Length: 88
View 1 (cartoon, one colour):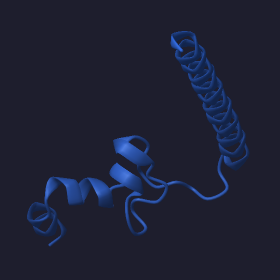
View 2: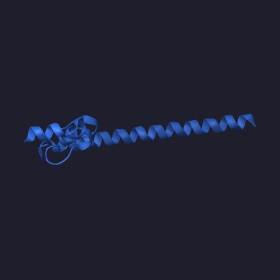
View 3: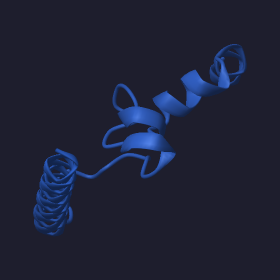
View 4: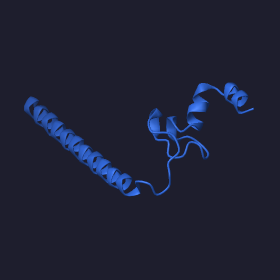
């Protein structure tokens, strides 16, 4: 029965259920992760500390990158203003 059901499902739907693409669904796809990475069933409490630490690091890195991009944008704006003033 299960095999027949899997055959009926489209590939994308099956991947979602199994925990790939975009987090998965139901019990089988717990803790999927985006874009086809991760997947499988995540055991509650196992490696929770490491996950939290990784999440913090990732968030910090993202924040730093965003700040750098904003800084770069500011520099470009100032440069444009200077060149515009020079024309006048």
